[in-house]
Length: 211
Ligand SMILES: N[C@@H](CCC(=O)N[C@@H](CS)C(=O)NCC(=O)O)C(=O)O
Image 1 (cartoon, rainbow, N blue to C red):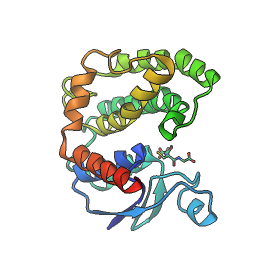
Image 2: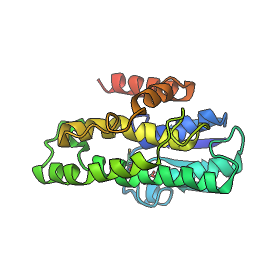
Image 3: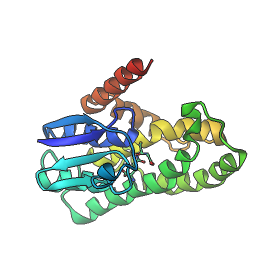
């Protein structure tokens, strides 16, 4: 059985967890934190979470994991069958990660009660509108982010935008969901899927346990 290493509080771990649930792949959650410990680096080369253990070995990096799950367990599918449509989903997922998630992440210090530097806020104010404009050209919301099929881009974007929306608003006054017509209704639809509700419930439980 696949083992998923990570914390329920990590949005990247939630991407993988909700994909495993969507694809009805049995898995076991193993508590792990990011670390530079050599034993962990042997499993996850940058020391990040998530990492999965498969029958073939360890695998880190969320988009690589999502592709592995898709190829090793093709149904239910989280990518379209057509090669170009698949590539468009990957283009969208990669764009959300590179130009929204990773930009907004620089301002996530507020989640841990840390002051966000003015220079970081200025970076977000400069770069997020560009990312938003790019992603805005790729999204469909008809009803899912890449069109009529629910794909892993929905999961990646949902778990990215939940935090990125807060960072963008607090640090740079940018409204990511408001900046893409149809995004809020899509966000709410993804939030109501069983896979996402289960991961959100695990987050609530972990927050309560933290106190
Ligand atoms: N590129 C990684 C990003 C994962 C990531 O940033 N995970 C965070 C937790 S949400 C982490 O491990 N942070 C610790 C670190 O960056 O050292 C992936 O796609 O899985």
